[in-house]
Image (cartoon, rainbow, N blue to C red; front, side):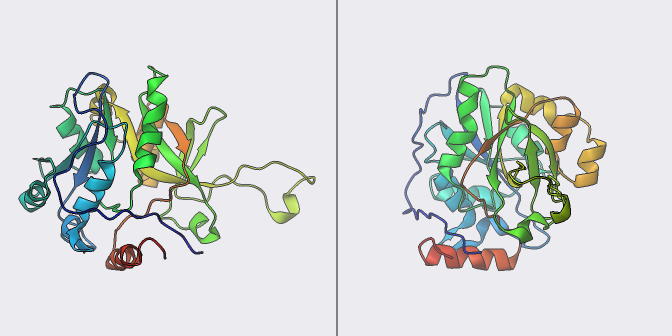
Length: 277
């Protein structure tokens, strides 16, 4: 399958968020967790892409989200912190012992006075700022909402059966019912398809961008891991197992993370080509 990405390349200059810059109680702050060590790609946040470190591409794209007031990198590495400060960004050092990015984001969130925290993965240099705005949008009308994320249609059959591609199913109000690495939902074998015109739910891929109410994030990070979370190795299931609802909005943005050297090379080719692969 051919995938087309829209790519914006940024010149190096101090980063100015496009949203409000005053941190009021209703403000949203993007926090990008960036762990320096990686089993498959050591030093990943500083990997060179089009002449700039990967973390800079993520930061600058996140900074153009109109609903976010500011962007902050949460990192366990002085090298990453210094690289962010060098291009005019904001960064904060965190403890090294965190088990995942959510815990790293939560550590930073304790010192923030905002209402909403956006967790943007530090290994997605093609993150779409419109996706950030979309994930933030339902909080304006629903004060009870504590967490949101994104999904996008699965168009490639290989992705449906790829255990590294997380699938999600939702209820009629677009709240998550379940996340899985397995191909869900089951739509019936060809011989069991039922009568013509039978409606089936199309499979959707989970896009791993999250928005949390700050107070919920602090509680969530302290919750004990749950059986389904351990089984699927998906920490968002911890929220569902503890009875919290997750709003899931549909986007056309298909995220592309960098986990391996081959992923990095593919990203470099996409950005060098100006957005086509």
